[in-house]
Image (tube, rainbow, N blue to C red; front, side):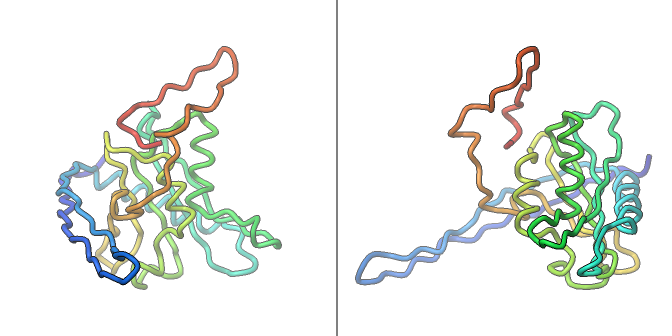
Length: 204
């Protein structure tokens, strides 16, 4: 589809910072992330970006006017189809669903559980700092639900300049301390006649 390139996600080493108090120490947790090298198809990413931008135009955003699109590929989809979603706002506000969750809900409804690539496009803020065009907290947690390390889940945030394809995040950089129940609770009950195997390489 396009040129394959090797992405280098640099190592991050940040030690704990501890402050003693009369009642016990307070610790700001550090973080150690090993360097990762991931092979990606830049043409595939460009196609997802274009799909995310296109679906953003169909967003239902009458209250904020802030249109967002997301497009993804699931690793366990043998067809590697592009699944896209836009933000859908609601007058109750709490009923609003973001583009990333819209796309992931479609993918999960099709039976897929392993997110490989997701591109999110905030079409009105492509030249803004990455914090103004990256996933919100609940979307990061939703991405965490389906993220894995074989292959490494990557999230690409559209924008960054006229010659940019996007800013790249793995889960360690997107949501360092994501909430996880799967290591402590058994899988949900699956209806008779169905099965849902879980790959231990995946965090969901």
